[in-house]
Length: 305
Image (cartoon, rainbow, N blue to C red):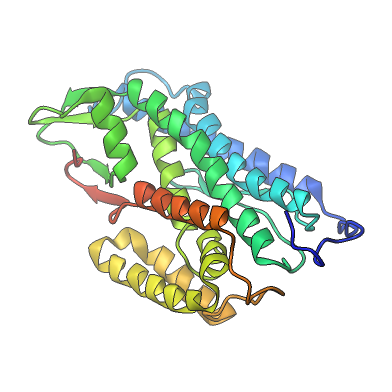
């Protein structure tokens, strides 16, 4: 839906892209997530012991790889098809491989032209988190059902994952409360879903050019500038809660210096969103709360229950 007077008479000519770059990055990300997924499966199969028996089996990494790529891909395709609907020129998704725990830094699309109206901005911004969330939730429940509750060795050394509210509710509904000295041994699919929830929360931070920044501006107008500054301050404060926020805080500060705290104005900046979209914005806020955790990853001698 667009406002009268802002509907393009002719779709803009898409700029020529380089789909081989998208494909190359996708293949590299499939490789990296499958490799690290195999390590995650090996750790899962070890049942909190030092290592599992037998060689590393790469195809088992697909439990993790297929799940995380489905969540991230759905998120970016949500943006992409919303752009296509509004005839906004956008690239295909770029997936980013990474040589560490998650095997990926996520994915993004490039929007190559200004988005003229609040409604278009809101719909494009919110489509990604909703699409990713719809895939992440069933993956979370299925992954948790494949997980195991096991006694935790006294000498166990590993990392603990902060548990978003939705994760806690899902784990409790399937496993109840773990007995003293026991912990949930996450199946790789559940770990991928956990990472998908974290990625959703990060994208929904109401800062700058993030999805949450677009949603905040569309819903609040110029008042979103105060929300952006406040959210950036909260991210900085979170670094005192957990060092795992440091990289994200640095990125947010760089983004604020590069683009400024004010969101670019749309042509209809003075027109408020309709009631339906305001309700969807409230739903996006609830989604953020469900997916957020104040301490995402902690390397420690014990896994938090």
